[in-house]
Length: 386
Ligand code: SAH
Image 1 (tube, helix red, strand yellow):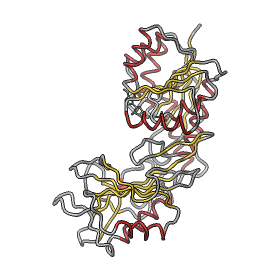
Image 2 (spheres, protein in one colour):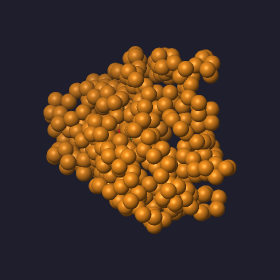
Image 3 (cartoon, rainbow, N blue to C red):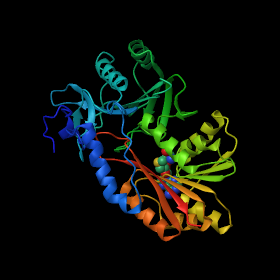
């Protein structure tokens, strides 16, 4: 263990709690993660060396700040203290994109002269709750989302003008209305104040639309490596029928479609499915379709009607997959399963099931998507025993 005076230590580390590996040098962090993956997944096969980042700082392309006041009444912005609603003021974060943070600081400085009050959770008074800034790494497009309790935002046009004067790189500004007593950042309503209301970003050959609420991986440089590895493991020849389960906005299926005969994406969240269809259209990909629903239910229905599948991509949330999904997958018997996981513990559980049902683990590739935190993403290739 390094002591807390290590030069990697962020001054906010203790109160913020977002980075569990603060104070540990990056090469050490990678060793630690490798060891953890080895102990969790080593029994299934050889664990390849984790792919780390050249520069592990400033990778988060989505930066969120909660706004409020300190005891002296000064406007502050930062993050909630762990398991509480107290705001930890953050001046500078090591893992967030520098430009996005700069925009947040500018907004904080503008509030007073525009007479915009920050929202107080206890009294319910005030207007501005959060600011969310998202940046397309490859496209350079920047979206600012102002989250307020009311659509009545004083001199909003001048506010946007003044903000864009400081940061001409901002391509769109959205006012999001969240009037609920909730810990969710975004409300349901978006009012576009400037630009198109979304940004685009590129991953590999494809471009993707990012709306205020869409899911998009927060570390695009490592996401490219993750997807490239997944598509390489799928070894597509152009003849395959492919399923992209838990597909989100369709990023993996769209990336893989050019190499396949046809792709079906399945996703529970209707908004993500809508974004996925738009993404497919904008990338002029015709051999992909999306179905909204529970992946297990959809798989079960497909297996019951005797449908066949050559390659299965699956990228479930942290809880992993379930027996309904896995048993139907096994029934459909794809030659290869490419499992992308954000939680090695549930991955291990699901690999055990697949191993007991005629699949062999061929490759295990950890990718460090979240330096300074203890999360690890893994791509795993399984092959059906002949
Ligand atoms: N593959 C995507 C998204 C992965 S995140 C990407 O790389 O960007 C996991 C996704 O699974 C989320 O979009 C979530 O909405 C979806 N999901 C969660 N439970 C699901 C279920 N039971 N059936 C289908 N999709 C589900």
